[in-house]
View 1 (cartoon, rainbow over the protein chains, first blue to last red):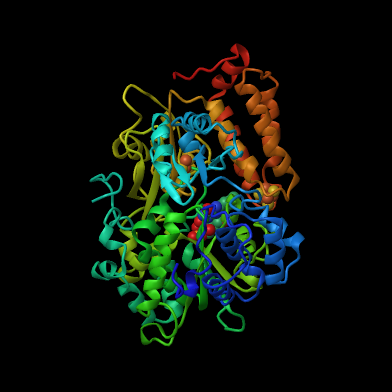
View 2 (cartoon, rainbow over the protein chains, first blue to last red):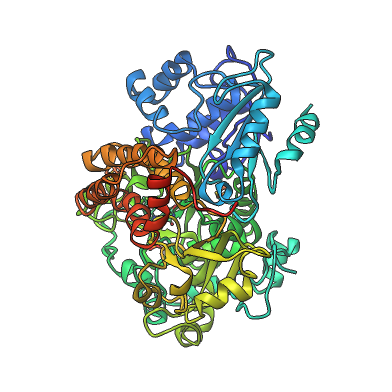
Length: 179
Length: 429
Ligand SMILES: Cc1cc2nc3c(=O)[nH]c(=O)nc-3n(C[C@H](O)[C@H](O)[C@H](O)COP(=O)(O)O)c2cc1C
Ligand code: SF4
Ligand code: FES
């Protein structure tokens, strides 16, 4: 991440990596710089809430109760308000997730092309159930709705990376490739 | 080069450079004639730009088909309040994936459209509300926005015209309902993406309580071509009521799924069979949803119509967002409908009782039928719930959720009865 990030895009870095630094301060260094830039792009502080939650999740890996309180302090919002907004949106992890957040599309386009077999394979090989994190903390598999690439079923997103045309028999190789 | 497939019968206006890596960056884009339309627009009066778009007949590509120029003309001109433009890049209607490709291959086409539209409506700040899940596309778009600032197409005094515009990329965070324009505005303001009661319309009270125009990515991407070449050029394609070309995202059971751009008087059946290659070998087409999961399904013999707004409506469905979902005879219709309804159940924002309750009841009953535990009374029950969900809510999501259920019962009742009477599925797997 460059210090000179343009303010126009400072808030638009949605992150789904679990960096696992749950105690990291909000915000310092380059992150403080981005936080300040975000605030310059909206007429009030409330509007910065989604970008700032994305930023906090990028730093800490998930949106913990402490994060909610801190973000509220920074934006003059109550923790209850921040929580009610954060919980509306599926991308904010209100619980810690595994190192690899595996999102399998089960939208209609992928479902028609047997997405359920792909989802089942991921669950089987990671020995998890939907939304649960594997014991070694590595994998969380979730089913998501249309990822906007329906011509390439099944669409799978692992953290920030999109995989298209994934077949059930390719899941094993894909998992190996992650490490 | 095309992406992923190209067909000689397409008319590639918006998608001309799909698949061309060199068109993504600003230098490549300028070499291909980019930002000429902007220079032209900035030399025109604001209202003259709106007038050209009005004359072109361009209709909103986000789903509702509202004329773009007319929408712009509702914006106040007195400059008393700041005006805003919001580009709706939330694309999440299942089966729709055209805005993603427009942003991925031709981000500058979208940005140029945004700048021209902002100029026409006298906005000084525009936001691109992009779906948060589009992590890879956000990166492309961000790069393009920074390039546009560096070259002076954004910021103060654009191309020496005295006009200035800031553009901010704002990522959503996973909520389909943020694609509804007033849900989008709430989300942009840092609230839950709950749709607002209209009126007031966004042009009166939009983002931050200020006059706002919300336009879809494809709508805005169509603007530079129109401004550069004129309304008549645009009207060489399509019909009187539906001018121009449009991208169709085609998915499901097709030999060549992908985005195809055709004039709006193109034949739907030819789009499915000729361009997309029809269903896979040895399969027969069962039905087609022509405009994203919110529009009624057409049977295979109802698709001999043109793809204009009025053409598809006459055939019994809607053009919607242009997300075409094809289903062949391996499809279990009950399952497919159940999947679509579960989507709406998950995405209902919960403000209106008919929507919140109706979507979950529909899903529950469909799951029961799919398992072979349905009863004959379930059919009238589904229709009754569907009827009570339509036209009674703050936004049309409730209506949309009932659409696949009601239309599939009308057209594929046998499939439902197969599950109910014989406890099994008629699909040829
Ligand atoms: C439930 C719902 C979801 C919608 N999702 C989108 C979307 O993802 N993208 C979009 O452009 N329009 C979407 N719309 C349509 C918008 O409300 C709005 O009509 C559109 O952005 C206006 O732009 P246009 O006139 O250029 O089409 C949605 C509407 C509803 C009711
Ligand atoms: S119809 Fe559904 S999604 Fe729309 S406002 Fe009402 S509850 Fe929310
Ligand atoms: S349905 Fe899977 S990407 Fe659209």
